[in-house]
Length: 264
Ligand code: PEP
Ligand code: MN
Image 1: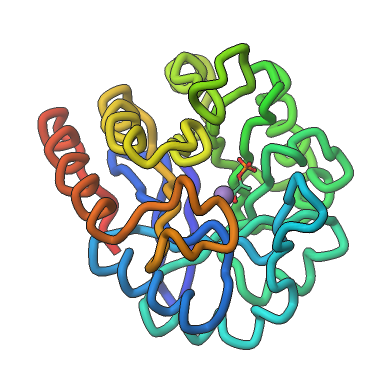
Image 2 (image 1 turned 180 degrees about the vertical axis):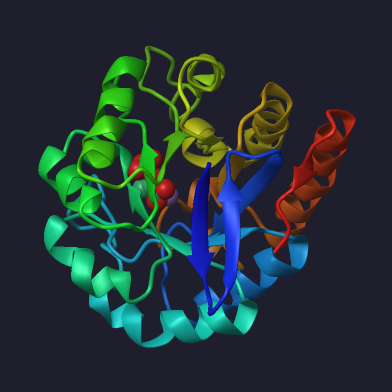
């Protein structure tokens, strides 16, 4: 089990009987956008807030994230809604600055093989959400997690976010086999990211329900107050209404299986 501590004495735990829902925008774009997103996902019952500060974009001309410009308001927003915060670290040199705002580091798909970053995160005690590389085998993904653990940080949660296949209909092919495999053969908690896994808002709900049904420890989804105006991944961003609807049905699947959503 992995515990994420936040605030003066609050915490949430991954890998128990409870199902975590991590939600928020692809990228933190402004204080207003982040505040609205945080309030919306909190109201729907999210367990944790997400939002990229440093974005790994395929196109160098695309929005790269606010970077350190976001640091002035993140803590205020987090404390106002009372949710822990996860954000991607893209470079080992960011550890010190990011520790001031994150409760959990995210390692993105493109950095799963960045062993110097993994070693650096192994030197902290802050939980790490390790996304699967989009061309990584399950074995490579588990070995990447071991880099962090062997460095001294056992607080690793895995995240299946889809792999690249011959199929162009969806952005990636969400590999739910890997989630069932990890649950059966490793002790790491594992969550599912159906936003990047499908790249299609209409598929995020069915895959979220599948994640709950198959025993994943949670999901991470991208939600934006104005999906069409998203500065990154607008095509897959969920509205608050769509997110609420997913939360209601996830609850039903979980309760049928004697599980619960992680409360906040
Ligand atoms: C993200 O979750 O913000 C992200 C960039 O996803 P991935 O690393 O899976 O592409
Ligand atoms: Mn995204």
